Every structure is written in C-alpha cells, then in structure tokens.
Amino acid sequence: MKAFLMYRDRDFDLGAPLPPNSEALIQDLELNVLFDAMALGDKYLHEVASKAVLQSLGDEAEVRYRQDILRDVIANPLLARFLYDLTIEANEVEKKSHAWGYLKSPSSILSQSVAVLHGFVALLKQLRGVGTYNAKRFSSQGFTAFFAMLDRELEDDYFVSIQDHINQLKFRDGVLIGAVLGSGNKGANYTLRKPNQQQGNWIERLLAPKPPAYTWSLPPRDEAGANALGELRDRGLNLVANALAQSGDHILSFFGMLRTELAFYIGCLNLQEQLAKKAYPISFPAPRARSERKLSSRGLYDVCLTFKAAHRVFGNDVDADDKDFVIITGANTGGKTTFLRSVGLAQLMMECGMFVGAESFSANMSSHIFTHYVREEDTTMKSGKLDEELGRFSGIVDKITPNAIVLFNESFSATNEREGSEISRQITSALLEKRVKIVFVTHLYDFAHSVYDKHKTTSLFLRAERQADGGRTFKLIEAEPMQTGYGEDLYNEIFGVGSFHAWERSNSC
Image (cartoon, rainbow, N blue to C red; front, side):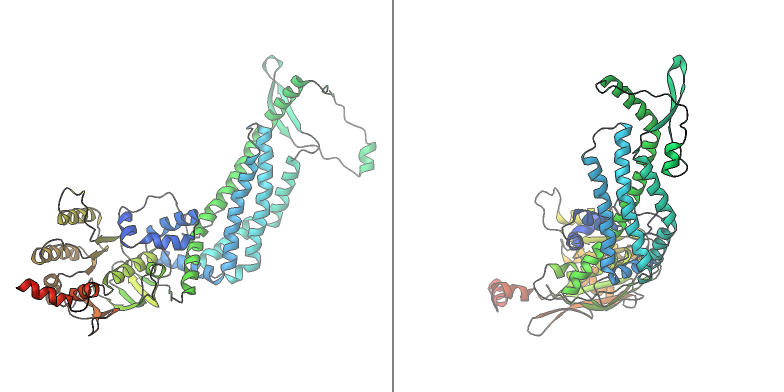
C-alpha cells in the first residue's frame, strides 16, 4: 500500500540530501522561524518541514497536486489530525510490543508479531473508516486516490481473513508440527501444520472415533525435556514467525510513510492556524513555467517576521511580470530587506506546494534559489570583507543554472561606490545573459542608476517610501533610484533630531 500524498507517483524521501545552498537560505531567509512555527515544538514535524520546504518541486503540475491536498487538509483539519494521530499510534503499538519481549526465539517473535498485527488491524479499520464515511469531503486527486486504495486493499473479507489467521496463530489448542526422519534418524523439515477441522456438533465430535495416534506426556520436572520440546516447537514456528514479522514490518512501513507525508501538511496546518489568529491573509500562489518571467503579488508580507515583530507587518504590492531584474533602493530601515525576504519565502513556499503570505501571488518556478546577503564582520577572516563576498558568490556560480533566482542584499558594498558598482554591473550582466532572474537591494546609486538608464524596459525599480517628516511606511513604491538612503534619519533617531547636521558642520570646520 502506498500513500502518495506528496508526489502522485512516488514516496517522499526524508533522507534525500538538501540542496547545496540550503544553509545560506536558512540563515538569510530566517527559515528556522518558519520551521518552528510549523512544528510547534514537535521535533519530527520540524525535521519534515525543513526537508520538504527546501526540496523544491520540479514543475507547476507537482505544485498544484500538493496545493490541492493542502486545501483539503485546511478544509478538514480535525480529520487530517486524526489520520496523523493514527500513524503515531501505530508507532506506539510497535514500541509497546517490544517493551517486554527481548528474546529472539521464533516463539517470542511470533507472540510479538501477533500482538502487533492485532493492534495494526484495529488501526487499519479506523483508517478505512475515515475514507468510507468522509471521502466526499476531500476533492484532491491525492486524497481521492488514497481513500480508493484503502477501500480496494482493505475490504471486509481482508479483515475477516486476517482475524482468522490471528486467532489460529495464538495456538490455544497447541501446535501441530510435521517432520520427517533425516540422516541418522534425526528430525528434518519441521513444518507448522494447520489443525484438522473437526466435523459435526460437539456431541458428534465427542462420540466420534479418534484417529490412531501415539502420545507421550512430559513429566512435570523434566526441564531438559521441556527445553527439547521448546526447540522442536521453535523449528516448526520459525518460518511462520518470520513471515508474520515481515507482514508487521510492511504495515508499519506504510504507517511510517503516511506519517511522514501527513507531517508536512500538519505543519502547514499549524502555520495557517497561527496566521489566521493574527488575521494575516494567505493565498495559494499560481505557479508558472520556469521559462516565463512572472512575479506579481498583492499584500506580500514576510511570514517569519509576523512571529518576531511586536507591531503589525505590512504587505507590499508588486508587478514584475516580464521583468528579469528587480532593483530596490531607498531609505534605510524602510523595509527593503524585509521585502526581499518575503519574495524569497514566497518563492520557496510556492515551490514546495504551500500557501504564501499574501492576498495573491504568482511567479515562475525556478531551477534553484540562491541568496547573497551582506554578512557581519568576522574578525577571524584571513582576507577582506569584499574578498569574502566574492568568494561566496563564486560558490554560487559553480552551482547556478539557467532560470535560477538570486536574491542580493547590499552585496559588494564593502568597497567604495565606484568599485562596488562596477563589480555589481559585471556580475548582474553575466547572470542576465544566462537567463537568471535577479532581485537586488542596494545603496550603490551608480550601479542602480546605470541599470535604470540601460535596462528600464526589462527591469522593475522599487524604492522604500519615506514620508516628508522622515517617517517610514515600510511600503515599496515603483520609482527611479535615488542617490540618498537618508542615513541622517537613522543618525538623528539615535543621537537626537538635528544631531546629523551638527556633526556635519563640526567636521567641515
């Protein structure tokens, strides 16, 4: 049996390696905040979330497949959580059966396997019952196929048959074992036999003549004889014990995979419910083909920031369809980095089949997502900060492919503006030639304005809005790059109004 709730044709591989740029994405997009919100303290949910979010899907059809399943989960949260709880209970059934059984003899394996199978049968009945009575509540292709599989594989006759086998394997009337004489008159080919079914009612069975047989009774204190009989019994039980243990492992494996795949959706459900409590909108994005250039949103916000900020997080509208270059300039602390992070988060969440933090969002799929953010000064570095930035970008170049996305945040600003602008121009020009989409936050006016002059039609220019009194709206507007980042606003905020101009006059003397 297969769940196929993450992919329509294969299982989700929790052990698959993460993309090589995962560490940078986790750091720059603050993904651990997202994973924590999805997990709510559950280590297993955290592990699944971290793997699923970072393993982007291949095309928009796979994204829509997961989106439809997630819609079903959000529409039926209690049923989804009940299904997930059944998978956890299956794991507990297996653990409890081994809590008292440390012996590895066929008899002990058989006893444990019978107990496990008995528990699994009860859970499988509940699992099928969910589909039998609630299948119409689910409309996604994934859940429809899943419930159809349960109905097909877990028919009533299956449960009757398996319960009959369980009852027989308890051997309430003893064990019937067949054997032959081998070399040296030693027993060989020990085989467990099915007891003969007695015919008629109990009176007929009582009065019926008994078949000829030889019997031998074990003396009460004959320990050696008891051990010998136990060995004979184990030889007969060996094959059936192994077969039953494998059956239990097969069912446990099914519940384990179902747990893994449901864990992703339970994590998404946890996130959705928390955002709903904070009255933040979510939407299912419209994925487009990699070859297209699409990026448009209404009310796009940084999901991770909602769990850290004391104030309301603002969303932004953007229309960068048919643009392969987005440059963001403007006032310091005006929301540029937050917007950049919201774009990266939405792209990742879309590509793994999740909803996004926005009223609406549409973007083309990417081959890879890379981030190149400015880093804090590291006193242990053996080279300069610019060398470190160039070295990190060299690592990105080694992995980048056409239709990738690169998010730059204040990159190459560790040198003077002229040199930093020239480096930025050369790097972005090379990326655009290779069909790489770029979103770039920068204070390098020379760089930003040169792009404005040469690539106005194929680029979008956003500016962090600043009010006349220096206040920040944390909104981005479509506008030509400005030469100032209004750093004096920050200076005056720290040292008092007018401090910047006083400092400026004192240094000009």
